[in-house]
Length: 120
Image 1 (cartoon, rainbow, N blue to C red):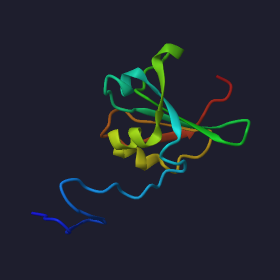
Image 2: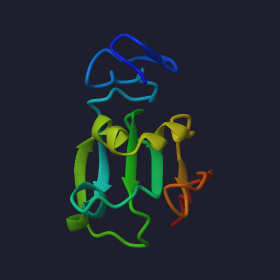
Image 3: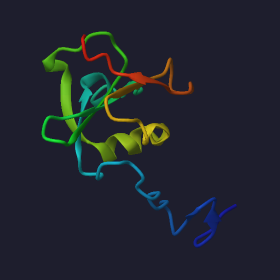
Image 4: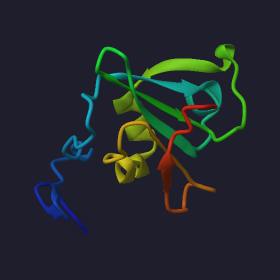
């Protein structure tokens, strides 16, 4: 049993709540991403993600439930940090190259990665 001040892997337990792990995502935690209402309000798992370059030289991240189609009304802007807390397995795609997508069959599956189809 771990008590105050003990080590749990690389994290130190300092009380009733564990500290946040180091931030390793390529954008700051307060960056906003696009997600769907199914993830944000219904709590569905994130099964698809994309990292896209913008004309201004920045990047946009999108995370959603994996449904084939979402309308504009289905999307929400949310801080990347909130999504990371809800789905720590997103750390597995922190090195997703620009203009690539990642998907998985369920939250326990490994992420698959491919270049985004710019034509579609």
